[in-house]
Image (cartoon, rainbow, N blue to C red; front, side, top):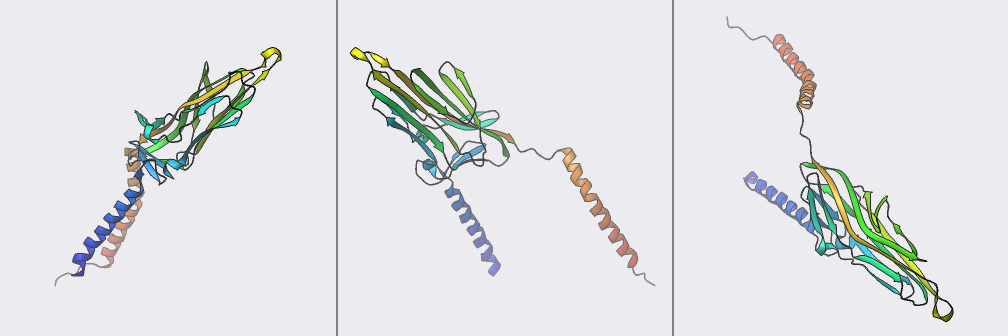
Length: 254
């Protein structure tokens, strides 16, 4: 009697555990809870939800500046696909422009974009063969303007526009980038400009691209090798049976 109700109870317990584990991987809704984005053949996992992502632009000096950053990218995220990759892209809306209006002083803006606790996992039947972040933006300095880009990878330029491709570890895809721009205006005699400049920069888009491929099925040679590994065991087992048969001959009727 006990077996008739214990087995369904175990099955119910397992099903409840499965539902609980599935609920832990909640969709990314902008909260600080861990969340997962289904990319099809892979998934992007945020350890602390939207809090895994940080974007900010700060005025360091002066007043003659125009700047901003959007720290909430989840609503604008777009999932991308190709034959051998899945991923997502978004526009962080990070930008800054300093100087140029003739206001006396030094003007400087610093911007930072950062991911922490981001990882990628393959769906059943697939494997991840690579991960890269592709950052696109612009950067320009005029006159005494100065500044720089902080990107952990080589840059490709087309006029004032750049593209940077950064390889990442899928299991720990922490990533940081940013820029600084600065310029000053020094007024000379009779209101003329003794020194001036401008600086501008932006990060227009960020894409995480996961290279995926199907998990290879065991080929004929692998199956033959596995069969070959079993042969000694089968031969030994058959030999034991034959020895047992000889040591215990069947009884004959008189």
